Amino acid sequence: MKLKQLSVTMAALFVAASAQAADPKLAIVYDAGGKFDKSFNQSAFEGAERFKKETKIDYIEAQAASDTQAEQMLRSLARKKTDLIAAVGFSQSQAVAKVAREFPKTRFVLIDAIAKGNNVNSVLFKEEEGSYLVGVAAALASKSKKVGFVGGMDIPLIRTFNCGYAQGAKSVDPKIETFSNMVGTTAAAWNNPAKGGELARAQFDRGVDVIFAVAGGSGMGTLQTAKEKGKLAIGVDSNQNYIHPGFVLTSMVKRVDNAIYEAFMQQKNGTWKPGVVYKGLKEGGVDWVVDKDNRKLVTPAMEKRVNEAKSNIINGKVKVHDYRTNSTCPV
Image (tube, rainbow, N blue to C red; front, side, top):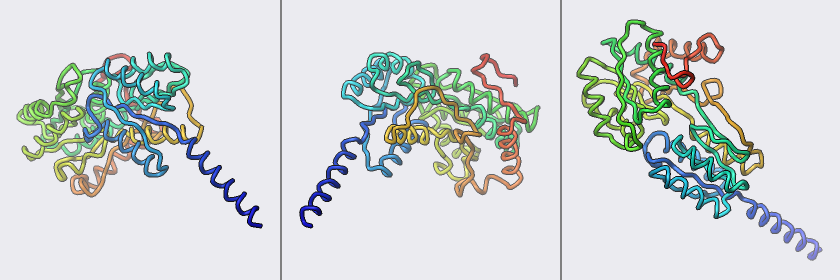
């Protein structure tokens, strides 16, 4: 009897040890914004942390300040026989494509861009759909009938946010005025809150009373300036309503956290697949947020109108133009 119990115990220990040994080796590489940008990268970090909390499986972190550095970091992680590497941001697309070819046994998840390869899963979002919703909210909240946009790096992705936002605002009032500025044309544009605040101040001085900030760390300057001016801002990527309660009308959330969480979990469960995935309102990839921090700013009528627009996009009654399809915006 004792020998039988000992055998069962040893078998159980062997199974446990095997399971532990099978834990995937995971890594995440943030872009120039850094994991504490309170926006895009932080959302990715939160997804990785949720996975870690649920599974007790840790992961390696790195931050790439440039495209060259991203390639070096990805290659270094692949050489360590990392099973899955999550690359956060379009700027890492070329690096992922190159390193993925060199290390076919390592899997890659690329956020916000497409890289070809049988070991690459590219996750993109329909930013225009979420931006349309906050454009509707901005137009309904604006008293001056002038709404603004402050983008980070001037690239098609950020113009997509701007175009979706303008379409949403114009759907409420075709005569509403829209203003737009970009922080810069290099990766430094994501980390310049002073410039983000300066651009917002100029727009507020021209009569704008709601600004959508899509600028990573630079957007913090826009949100701060909205508070100083007693105006409204709209957050992006992560829920930023809490940053300046009463001055952040809403946030257009982009569920990068879910994308990272799902990729890590798929690797753990053996269900990971390569390919390209698009996540919009229907897929839960983007949305707008109403919570305790902005509840007083969003009237029941405004919430109803925005949610009607959301339903119409999901069921196909409203088609939001994606700037990236032809590099133009219809409004």
